[in-house]
Image 1: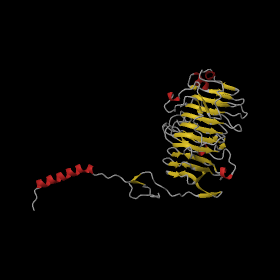
Image 2: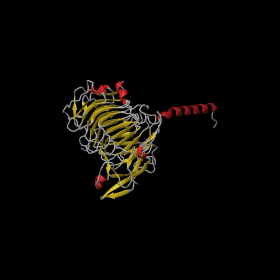
Image 3: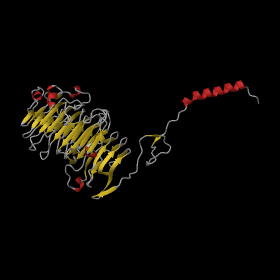
Image 4: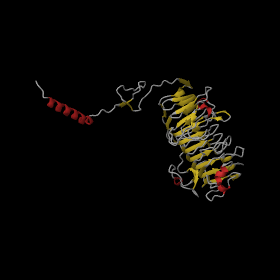
Length: 444
């Protein structure tokens, strides 16, 4: 049969046009599922990984006092979850690699091994932790000696987060440093960096001292950025600092430092973050400062300056016989402290300013307002601008029961300082009618 060439051309054109027009009417959605062949629930038909991969445990195990523990050591190179249905044992440094997320379920117990190593958990730059507990099911890091006997401060190295935020000890933006105890590289130029989430996490008996100026704390935040969420954390009976900030812009809300042998909260290396609802309960058997606040002890003028804002804090200082200070602002730190209750004992000082930080105080770049410091031999030392500030006081308000209690007189609403803060028009960290430490923390 003879076909008209013109008709054929028109038919082909119509088919092409119809095909093009019809294409949007048909779609092929990628099937979601687990695309990792090494996972238990690998789906060979899935085109798009939806993050639900489940992995069979290949961790070695050990039995202690009749209980089985899954041993973690070395580097966690890919994302994984630690469930509360198992007991976990940290042996040596455990590192969460860049690109990996370590998820820890609510109620999970993790133990530092007593095996001759120095256990600690270190999240490397680019890695993340996702540890979200609850008041009834906190996530607890402790030593195996709480099971076998002999638990004491300094049993292990605590938790270390390493971020990409700026630090000041190595020449400015983008530079890096090495964490104490071989815990990893930190620093960079991203002040909004995100190292993950920790909520309702308790660290017990940490603060391993390895040598002079080589110490691990309860929580170490190294160049951690403001994208990280840190809330409801307790550092309990460590041998070094409870919480230490090495530069960065990390923010921390609802934090309790209990019975730590060195400083309860410590900042240096250009920390420029924020803190609210910080409580300190010192042990007279072993303690140093409630807050130890530095820019950098080697070069007071190095930038970026330490310059945080902290509001609503309570320090219940103990007399360890050394006449120390509850708050020491020194070595060039700047910053702003508001709404504090600083309760003293013995021959020490309440709040003291020294070194070039005195210059910042005189220039209004170092501030302490709306704060009561009382019960010390010298409540306000070397800081006349603070002592004479009308919002400050040296009179016991009679409101504290331990670290619980607040004072309303001359307080400021911290939401007027920065939108990150929660409303709290009172001095102190823990209201008697809203004890946020109840149920998930340990007492002194």
